[in-house]
Image 1: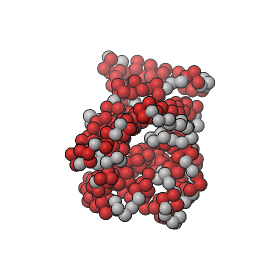
Image 2 (image 1 turned 30 degrees about the vertical axis):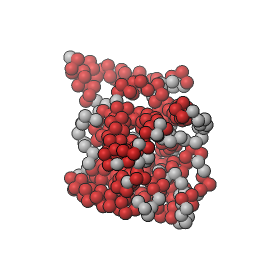
Image 3 (image 1 turned 60 degrees about the vertical axis):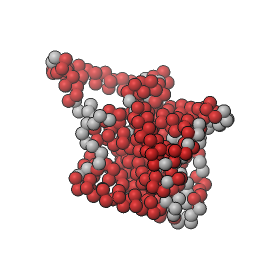
Image 4 (image 1 turned 45 degrees about the horizontal axis):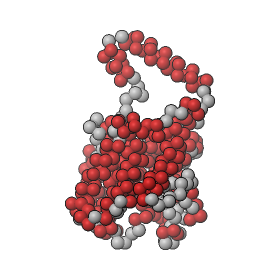
Length: 366
């Protein structure tokens, strides 16, 4: 009977996670960690910088698209607003405080704490908070993607936006989130076809060749989306042009990346649920190695050293996505904070009804 109950629970709609999305999130976060480990090393290797350029073209867009896709149901319902606060805003405050304190502890140099100036990785939490909070607007307007793209293009020519809350990144990455909101399951199925998987091989090969060619010719800061065209020393009209060009390249490589993501359950599938843990925590490892000067060792600037660093950080972020790590840091990443919110009578009634339905379903299956 207990086996039947367990099967009944597993068969209920909405209880199953799609392995494809968890696999994609895990692989994307591994690429993020690897890219951060390459930053101190890439200056001595044109090949590594070319790979870095290609990875930075699509790894965050791929992650943001999925974030947008899973934000489609977001509205201003109290329980969803609570999750937005406890799962995004509170971690931002905690990690925005923890990173400077960590630097102070390791280096002994004073680092100012500022909640208005996202430090290192925390910009994504600010962006996710803003994007998700504006989701009802994007669901309301008639042409959400062109509007978001227009905002991103305008941001790219507006240096006066400044650094507060890293709004340049928030606005320039906005189209990817909005595109995720507009996507449907069949769109992901289209890019996972065998023909796309085969075509992605020459596309990635061409991207690497172009990346190698572009290393001495292009400012890689364009890929960070954190500055306007004027701040990068380019004419203002380059901002909109590069916004469109970068989005075209990013979406092409993102589609190629998705085509190779396994759709079945893999050994790392369960880690997809803990990618935000891996994302925020691996920053401490990267910064500790940087503060201690570990990246300055000469042997790390040779192919064998670069491969070693890549594998170490891929393994480290994998460990940081695991369940034991999630249990340890859940207080910071997913605090319950029931004491901070008013009890919503409608939500409590819905919760009681849900539990009653579950009990009835279990009795029927038994």
